[in-house]
Amino acid sequence: MNLYTKYFPYIQKNFKSYANIVVWGIGANIGNCIKTFNNLFKTLINNPFIKIHSTSNIYKNPAFGYEKQPDFYNTTIIFSTSLCVKAIFSLMFYLERKFGRKRIRDFKNAPRTLDIDLIFYANKHVYFNHMKLPHIDYNNRKSVLLPLKFQLGLL
Image (cartoon, rainbow, N blue to C red; front, side, top):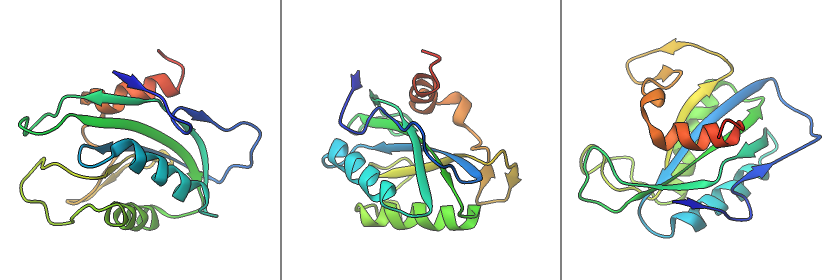
């Protein structure tokens, strides 16, 4: 199921871009997910270090991993930034907490109010125990591929 809001999908034309292009995969399945996504967009668009290029529409997907939970809503956001990758991770964790996500999960793949995955950051390839770029499993997740293909005009 595809959902549309004022900010999803969104395409910004004729803007100044920062050097680092970033792709985030966004997901949620607790609370008013659409409202959370819209509020996240408004938070990002007001950040002076971020220029949103585009967002996809919102997809409703069945949960995977732990399947006995509500369906997920997923979207992607492409933006440019002057922030380094470490600052982007700090921003992601801050935003997840701001929108009600607990950092300590009850269990793997537990329901959440907001999940932000860093899919790509400026064509960087980084491999640490806690972080891999590009995101290690993005090409196996319809929750990332479908919104991203729509956003890039491939669907």
